[in-house]
Length: 366
Image 1: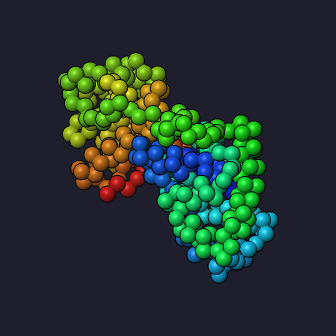
Image 2: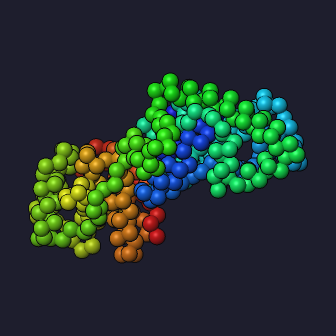
Image 3: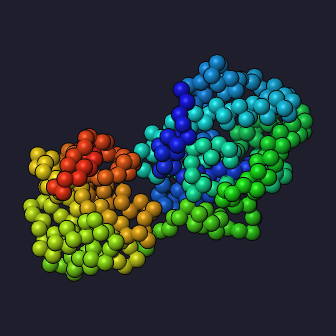
């Protein structure tokens, strides 16, 4: 079965990729950004053994090739070694894509992987991938000197003729990586060349700027109560927003405070101001009183979009509803493919009070 590129890209819309050449710093930068933003990391090298166990000789000949010792492993010609390495990358990519589709359904994932520009074209948008590159020199020594690469260092040193094994490995990796290095530098993709005079933090900052990420100062989500200063701030936020489709409706709700019982409004605040909002309602703009609660009026200021604020608001609203004993929540939308990333599933088409058709989504929140 072959999936079209646009389908793969759609299902991987929550995945950001960091790739590049050997010793370019991709693993270091991935760990730095994952820690800084609290984003789950998927490292392709960590998954190889798992994927290998699921492989068979017919479909994954490279991944299922075994070697009795280092002499057999490094005793191959450079061309044989290169074909095997590239074969492993191609064969494992299928497993990786399926893992990422599953893991990123309702969250952002940061993926550390080996991928060439031609493959990147097929699976992601240039705005969601960064290449960390380094001109290939002394790859084996640089690689083996890292504590996390000690198993490989021990393996190559176990060869009867270490210098010969090292020379074969060095030539193989240099030839593979010099091609990738030159291709990436001449592509339109974003890349960062390794510079030992630049700190890890500064290097990571270049990548997060490319991704459009930034930490929100003093980020919080708060429930708005009637007659409070926060309620006044919310009214001003809605009144000055570009949210023309629902603005008047929300101004009326907030001004008259038409929220009853457990209904309410939540706001996201950062940089000392409201940057987004959502509400939980018994009824929305639909003649369907049998369905509730609704997570509605989800809006984030344009300046702060792309920072996963919507997802945090939705999660907060669902936690509030879960604490009240609800097992499902509903979202109406005229968008397709938006709320699926937050774990919602399409139910059916519905008609609002204005006579327009929308999509109904639901999520189990228990």
